[in-house]
Length: 114
Length: 111
Image 1 (cartoon, each protein chain N blue to C red):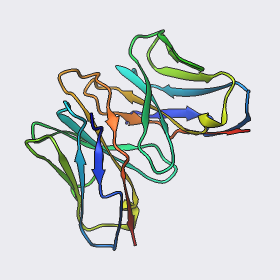
Image 2: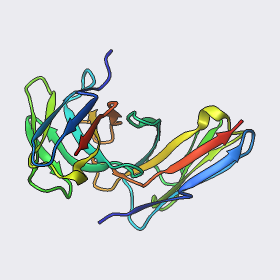
Image 3: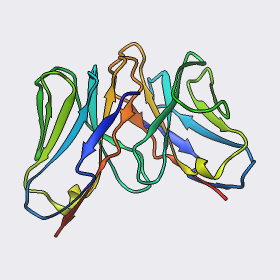
């Protein structure tokens, strides 16, 4: 049973560029949440997707957008990258019908913006 | 904005010692989770607590959830070097399963 997978593992971009990160949820899960973890900080909630729609959103600008596909996988897009977007981006999956279902995290994508 | 405070931020102890990490908030959690994170990896769930006053044990780790569901603690007995890592508490305040994380406690256990 595969856990949560993310790609790529590492990425280097320059300011102003756009980036797309990908996530495949754990088998049987239908909900994907994205988090940003800056160095030395705890993860911060970006948004959550269910049934291909954004269900919840944290305090992040519109430059951060996402998508969920019919197979429950998800993408996180960040436009007009800033130096401050450098972070570990974590994807977590869960099953919505059980709202207290544990979130399982992927290994993350380390993004460096130069 | 919900705020989760963890203390201490850093902890360095000798192998065999006991330690306690605290997680506090002014808001009530519908559930609270403790995670352990290694450098460059995603957080790995240790435990989920839901009921006020709940105590859960995982080998040498004991987790307590406050009666009012606003605070939690993690106690490690006889720490080992393998316990080294970043310990994060995360609270679900809304019941919608989007987690608010504390800043973490970085534990180093010296052999």
